[in-house]
Structure formats: C-alpha cells, structure tokens
Length: 355
Image (cartoon, rainbow, N blue to C red; front, side, top):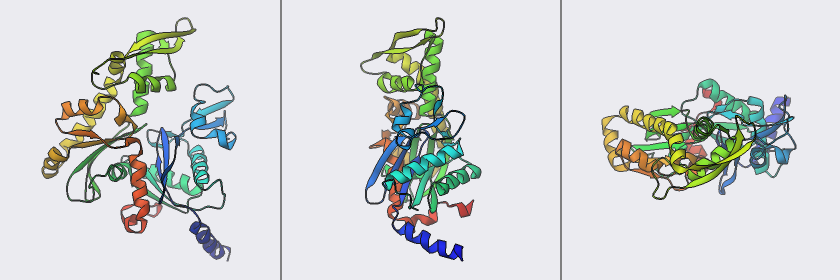
C-alpha cells in the first residue's frame, strides 16, 4: 500500500522538478537545465571536518568557497575533491556535493526529484558507473542517465556526430583526457587517459621542487599554468613571481619563473596527450581516417586553453586542430542538448537498469 502511494507522490514531485544535465568533473562541476542553458559552474570541492565526512555550513562547504580553502584551512577542516581521475573516490562526499547542487538549482527546496543526465569518462568500469548512479539517486534524482563525455563534448562543440562521417574530439578535463573518433552517435575508437589538467599542475609542482627546491601548492601551480604555461614557444615569452616554502630552510621564499621553464615542466603531460591521440588515430578505420583529413581534431575542456596546445598537436599529428568555442562548457552544453530531446535520446543513454 505504502509503495503504491509513494509512486504517484514521487511522480507529482518530479513534475515540479527541473531536469538537469551535469558535467561531473574532477576539477569543476557544471549544471545545465532545459531552456536555460548552464546555470551553475563551481569547483568540485567539498570542505569537511577532519576524520569525518561531515560537511561544513552548507553555503560555505561546496564549490568556489571550498576550493579557496585548499591548502589554507586549519587542522580540523579538510577541503577535498571527492572525484579522482574522473571517477568517484569518495562516495559519501560526492552524494552530498550532488545534493547541494540539485538543491541550489531548485532554490534550496527539499521536495525535488529531477531526472538527471550525467557525463562520464569513456574508460570507466561498470562498477564506477554504478557508483555515479547510486550517488545521484541518493542525492535526490528520480532517474539517472549516463552519457559518455566525448559524445556530450561533440554535441556541445557543434560537431555532426549523428552523421556517417568521422568527428574527432579531444576533451581535456581536470582528471582525464578523453580522445574519441565518433560517427553515427557511437564511439568508433577511443582512448581514456588519466593525464589532464591536474597532472599538468602536478608537473609544475614537481618542477619547482626539483629545480628551485621550492614547495608550492595546487592553487599556485594552477596559477602558473594559466598565467605563463604553454605547449609551444610563445611569440613573446613571459615570466612571473612564484612564492612557496623553501624545502631546505623551511621558510617562505619567492622566485621568478620564465614561461620557457613552465613549458618544460608541462612537456611530459602534453607528450602523453599527443601520444593518446596518435594511438586513437592508428585504430581508426581507413574510410573514417580519410574524413579526418578534412574535419580535423576538435579540442574541448579546460586543458584546451593551454597556450599553443592546438599548434603543438597539429605539428605532431599533421591534421588540422581547432579549439572549440567555449571549451570549458562543451560537455555541459551537450548534456543540455540531450535534455531537450530526452524521450528521443533515452535509447542511446545508459541507465542503472543496464548495469
């Protein structure tokens, strides 16, 4: 009896909920809603009490304000990223983060049960997919659909992925780089590489430790990457002041770092991304390879904004390379396109019933 009464109630609540598309990224989470586009973009960071998964005061615990706490919080507070390399590393905290985003979209209302489309890396396992679905359902979603990130990115970038011609997408996020050749709404060949924006930051941290004996934090490394980082020689090289802790003296110290040094630090993750593109192309059927001579490669994701990356790939691969318009939002806009035609596209989306 109670079960039969619950279903109509859930349906009624669902009718007054806003369906959402979520780009659940290692570094950032973007939320798109039908008819409005992207309405939320915040870092995938949650502040919790040390030794527990107890989230701090709701308004200050998730997203931008939580990210600003990274490396700066007192000992009893930990600012963590619940996703690692594109997959859930902390199930409970991810659930709380999703609940916060769902409630924020619905003006903090508790009685909401939206349908949710979540973009996932192409290389994750069935167990990892199930973890995403379970987290979203426990956070308040009544129905969860999964779409592969390269397909969502391709739609968001405006590529003709529904046509019988090859489109190649390289989506460089925070934790993973997704490389895929797509045709007729399907992935023909793909490479999922756990080297992306976070690995670039780590490479800069390691370079500063090795060459300057200076320890810097994640936010400083990201700032170096965005300010003077590049994958190809710049027309006008740059430099910046970088501060951290001297590993020998244990005291604060600052140094001047040149863009040539930042490029050297980033060379290894860039090389691995180019290698993944080459591997994907080597597996592509010849007819589709012929298409790519004309259509080229489209870069998406935050990593696509690294200066000179498109040119570095173009020189190595010998195919035209372009950075998509608004690369940071391609995947989220792709989930929005699926939302607009959910009944039509539900056949190409994965659900928990298939896992």
